[in-house]
Length: 307
Image (tube, rainbow, N blue to C red):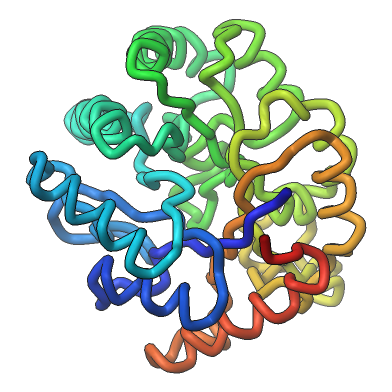
């Protein structure tokens, strides 16, 4: 049975206790908890630390477990979305180091799911990135196997500014690239944190990959997208994607959530589906962001029955 959750990045000013309390009050089953290292965020939704893995000893592990019991809300996975293949080698090395730390933290917390990005040097082609992808990710996945942790790669292109042309900051954007990745690293600990919205604006069918990669979907995000055809008709698909599409709450965009979730369940997936709020219309205040979580919950409960 699917579990309905949300991504904690939308509540950066709250503690983990408070995040889980919001989830329980609304009726969510789980939360994907952001675990960035302490420091300043470089983009929206980044740099958020609801679990500080640098200060994770036995007492902290016990306290986190007690919070999930207190609120009756599970942690669906730890989340950290940097660029491990950045052209800035210091940035990439720091991201990789923290990924290894999170793999160990997952084992400590008995949370066998870590969600992240593969990364990319956006100034280079997929082929030019490939040797570094293999050099970086083969040992990361080997470490994940050793610690009993599955890594789910989100399929967001991470292309928001003109500086990120032509590739964006994440290799794992299309079914063709996923297939190549999984052929190169054929581990059952290496899969997807599947977000259908990123396929929609790329004009890729977001349903067929659910069947094609059924054994590789470890976690899922629920975010909608509205493609504004009047804007697309002016700038074309070679423009910056934000010139013609907007992230929206589930039900406010292009995705038929009843169909998507029915296929996801029929494919054999029985894991978390976590709302990712990136809808600017709801970001003004903490209360409006909580309202976005309530609206998304109430809409998706039409398709995901509470256990």
